[in-house]
Amino acid sequence: MVIAQEKHVDLWFLDINMPKLSGLALLKMMQQKPEVIITTAYPEFAVDGFKLSVTDYLLKPFSLERFLQAFLKAQNNLKNNNKVVLVHKETDIISIFIKSDKKIIKVVLNSISHIEAFGNYIKTLQTL
Image: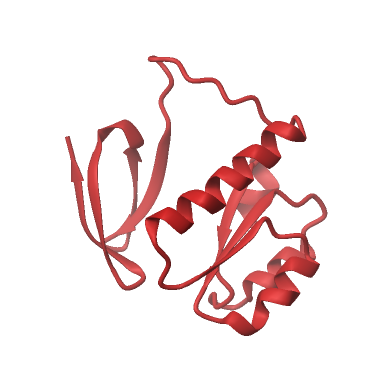
C-alpha cells in the first residue's frame, strides 16, 4: 500500500490471496483506483471484483493471449479516460521489478528474450 500512496500507478495486477490482506480488501480501501486486472485461482470472487470496477479478471492458469487481451483492455481504458499518454520512443526505458532470490531486481523490458513460468513463479528469465 505504501507504493500506492507514494507513486501514481496506472495499472495493477492484483491477486485475491495475498499475505495479510486480500486483493479485494486492498481495492476497497483505495480512494483513487487505477485500472486493475485481478489474477487469481479463485473464480468465486469474480462478481465481487467487477462490483469494484476491475478492468478484467484472469483465472489462473491463463494463456498469454488472454493476458494480452486484458492488458489491451486496460490500455484502451487509460487512453479513453485520458489518464495516461502512451508514447513510444527509442529512448524510453520501460522496466519491471521481479522478486528473485529474496531480492527485488529491475529488468528492462526491451532486454527480455523470454520468460518461463513455473506455477506462480518465474523459472527462467532470459535477457539479451
